[in-house]
Image (cartoon, rainbow, N blue to C red):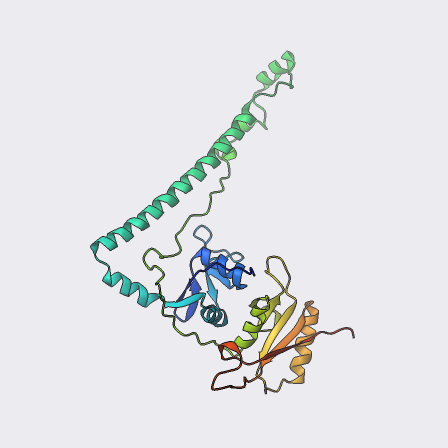
Length: 306
């Protein structure tokens, strides 16, 4: 994460209890400068049934949303309430301007789509013209030419295909549609946004904040049997080094859980990391650690050999 982080306020839309980000620039910003990957959950307009690569919006889990709010980088917006209230106070001129903005976006997207389609068609036409030119290096004996003419067209002549148009039709790869994903023109960022408090769904926020503050990237760790998969850098560049679980400071950890998680982590070439928050000692009514959290201690378990 860069030392000099540009100032930006990320709008986190809360919809049906989920925390979503629709603006691609915000997604890039939180990943590059704050080590938050989140999870792509949307579908792409031209590939609605894909099961490998998803699109916007990205969904934050509650710990990620709370971290952005605590840092002052993002704010939580109740999307339904904000849209309805904004639309209700818009006068005729503002409503007309917003509709014109949406129409202009659609025209720009259509123009970009048509330009890309024309380039693809021109490329295929150039290939067909090049293939139709006679090869000057190939010479045919006059007697052989007359024999071919008498015997009729060749069985393998592409011009005699039952459906020549189908045979020569190029396979066009159209660009993905350009679809606006944010209504920032309708809902501009307020100067002093009032953010709704985020209540993490689990007690693992102290561990998550601890890992993020030390430059680690995390993703959901369910596939490896933990709360998080922990990366030393961006997951585009590194494999996960740890699988992590969070526990309470005085919580008893069953020995079977340690053995099972440690062996599972070793099997997938990762160490098993677990940590807990030490209750902060209050000094003058304030918690010792910034943000009201105490000290976090972590340990790693890895099987060296059996």
